[in-house]
Amino acid sequence: MTPVVLGPGVRAAIEQHGRETYPHECCGALLGDGDRIVATHPLSNVTTEGPRRRFRIDDKDYLTSERQASAAGLSLLGFYHSHPDHPAVPSQYDLDHAWPTFVYPIVSVTAGTAVALRAWALRADRSAFDERPIADTSEPASAS
Amino acid sequence: MPVSIHIPTPLRPFTNKLDVVQASGATVGEVLHDLTTQHAGLKQHLYAADGRLRSFVNIYVGDEDIRYLQKEQTPVADGQTVSIIPSVAGGSGVAAPALPALSGDEIKRYSRHLILSEVGMEGQQKLKAAKVLCIGAGGLGSPVAMYLAAAGVGTIGIVDFDSVDLSNLQRQILHGTSDVGRSKLASAKDTLHNLNPHVNVITHEVALSSANALDLFRGYDVVVDGTAIPLSVATQGPCMAWAVRF
Image 1 (cartoon, rainbow over the protein chains, first blue to last red):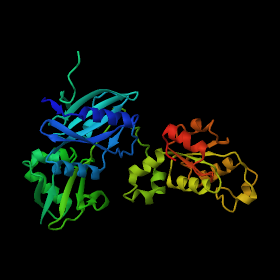
Image 2: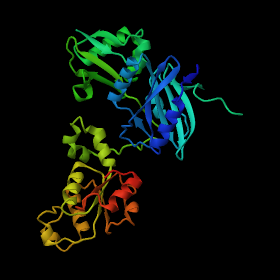
Image 3: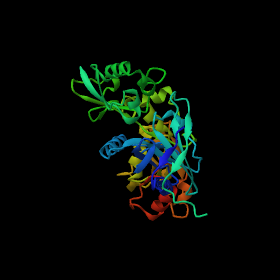
Image 4: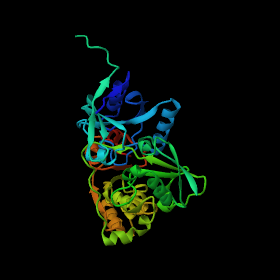
């Protein structure tokens, strides 16, 4: 799978949103171009099934995200969400609700700390997710 | 009759990257059929194996969700816009518990709810799964508990420690003349069971305080403060701590 490239601040924004909403799931839109995500838009989790284990994005927020992407000359590339106290691995429920071509980064937030970020994409036949490697362009080089 | 169909980003690979496609039909169902005939790759993402629209595919005619119109039978007029809006949802692996089934008696009892699109079978099952705690079986708690019981809320808890006085009856409609002198909880339980025997009534004969509130609220989805002291300290803090609605 081709890597998904996170522009400056993208990883930090997703992790921060996950910490803010913990122990509930956060969610948000990802705008960018091709395989490169350049902007995150945090959205409200409007699930009625318990936000500790579920998220849902309002239809109006979805439309707004598409319009914002278009207005900025970008594409809507996907949506991130958090798994509080749960691995950054998609569930069957995630699979049932996934859309083609979108990238779905999941941040695992354990005891209020973001511990892992992994990105997933729906296989063409809808049978499973494939992991997409993440390439950060935002992180400063290690001091070591 | 050509209508414009807005295609969301994830489905554009199946429409030659077009964000607007023209299709014909007199109803939403016909228009979508024409669309998936023109662009066959869309079909598996819009329809489940049984031929029904996937539950997370939202279709709008103009600004209206067809779930609240006539679903796929919703008529479309020349020049109208149909939008396909992905319902974006997900969550971690632990599934929400299955909703309780309704018995034949319950289906008959709630039939007026079941024909309302805003409630329907799933909504009624959610009501049955819901657990609501009423603080007080007095002037406010009475109508709240009775309407919730009548509507089919499956579990109703009541917190009270008082007994019924003749002067209560002018407003506390859970209790009747023959209940004077009885505990309000016993009276309330009888009234609610008479109204709806399917409701599980749990009584808590205690005075609510900040010391016992957290234990009482645990396990309830919603707490209704019927004590006539709005947002009482004993209620508000533990609700926030336990993330229940009140």
